[in-house]
Image 1 (cartoon, helix red, strand yellow):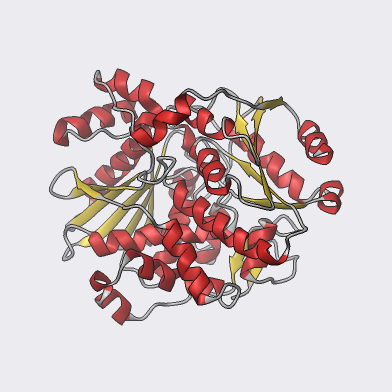
Image 2 (tube, one colour; image 1 turned 90 degrees about the horizontal axis):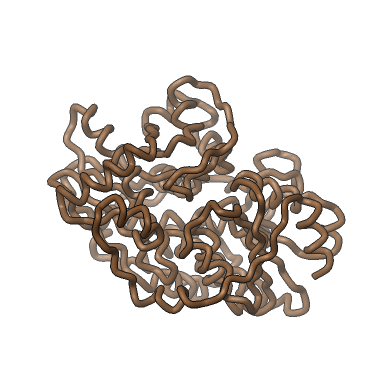
Length: 433
């Protein structure tokens, strides 16, 4: 499989080369030359296939010969060493828990897969140090820090917006040390993301170090998110009903992976992009005009993205045909007040404690089902454990959230970060390393 830049001004490259580069030299996102179709027999027999074997079959065409099959199988097995439970909320609604990994966030899948792919790629580049530069609006930082912690030959630099991530999220990305460095940016997530993109086309940096990104702009992070859509289809509660999946959406890599899955043949009948007031994509689906805007802070901070990078990939999947896109993708957005009411509603209906992002996903699914004339099995993705947003959840529900054992060790660690407010400061820091 070859990958090309969506700015169409760079050479086509292989999977591992695209993973190592992160962003094309022309600042475009990499995109596969084709989206392969899986045979119907695969879906007919999916219930008898392990999660790891499903994931291998899904990702192998995109990797090609870059990683030997036995090694790729081991990478997939190491990535998917936790479960993805489906929890019923009502007769027609359930949630897919994606937070059962080590950092309690759905991004564990992509971060672990990418880290293991890069570890393999570095086997033959032992003398070349790779710097992973990543922007986070919340959970990406912790997942990337954990996934790359102590990976030989890789340094990780994580940019996050000051005061705009939760306390636990900040602890996860600022307390590991070793090969992990946290940069605290006086700005928004979009500012952090712009700095990362600027670094990739800065000739001074390019000539002095090897840079890549672990955001969902990186194909390894992005494409591996397909895994849990296939697993969700395999384990769905009502297999005879049409399937609708609501995705809390920020940078739109996750839902883009769902759309790729659907084009590979996965029988997802409807995808729903559920956002907070950072509603660039829902507005586009309603008006046909794509108008990025400055991001605004909300209680669902991982979705505080005003200019989602991955939406260009979605447009490419549908050849910029908004009418085709609207047949499979709906978009809705919600305020913090509505999100809190949804957290209460979910808890009242089922006793289930949702985080703010999952609550936004629930609202989008609920709105779609209300307007649909057909019977659907509805899934909303629960992308983070509620402990990540413990203050909001506990104040909203007036109850306590138990701290999972695997997160307790993080809470007493000391934060270590480097404050900056400009790209020039980031560049100076990177050049001095």
